[in-house]
Image (cartoon, rainbow, N blue to C red):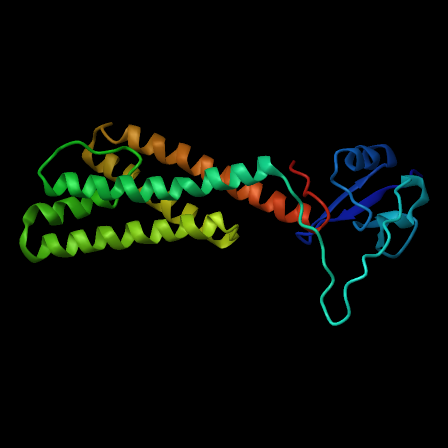
Length: 226
C-alpha cells in the first residue's frame, strides 16, 4: 500500500492525503516549510516536515531570542499579495465615496447616479427629496453608512479578515436590495449597478483571499486552493 501524507495548514484544515511526488511539488512551490506539521500514513504522530528524511528538507537552526524577550520570527514578504490586499481594501473607499457623491447629487436634484454606489441610497434620496427633517435624517444616515464602509477599508488595509468578510456581506445584501428594486420596478435600469456590485465583490474577495494566503505564509504554509 502506497505511503501517503496529510498536511496540517495554519488555518487548522488538513490537506491530503497525497503521495510523496505531490508532496515534493508542494515543497518546491513553497507551500511546505521545515516547520509544517505532516502526518505520514504509517505513523500516528504529526511531525515537522524536517523529521521525514525522504523530503530532504534542511533542518533550520533554532533562532535564539535575547533573554527575557519573546522569540523573534521574520514575517513573510510577498509584494504581490500585499498589493492585492490593498487593492481589495480600497474598494470599500470607492463604495463609500461614490455613495456620498450620489447622495449630494440627489440633494441638488440631479438624476445622475454612480453605479458602484450603495442601493440603500435609493431610499435615502427619497427622504432627502422631501426636505425638512426627513432630508436631514437621510443625509445623516448616508454619511453614517459611508463612514462604516470607510472603516472597513481602513481595517482591511490593516489585514483584518473580519473587515473584509463583514463588508462583503453587507455589500452583497445591498446588491440583493438592488435586485429587489429592479424586480419591483419591472425594468432593467439597475442592471448596471447590480453588475458593478458583483465586480466589486469579486475584487474584495480577491483581497481577502490574498490576506489569508499572506497570513498562512507568515505562519508556515500556504493553504492549497482547490
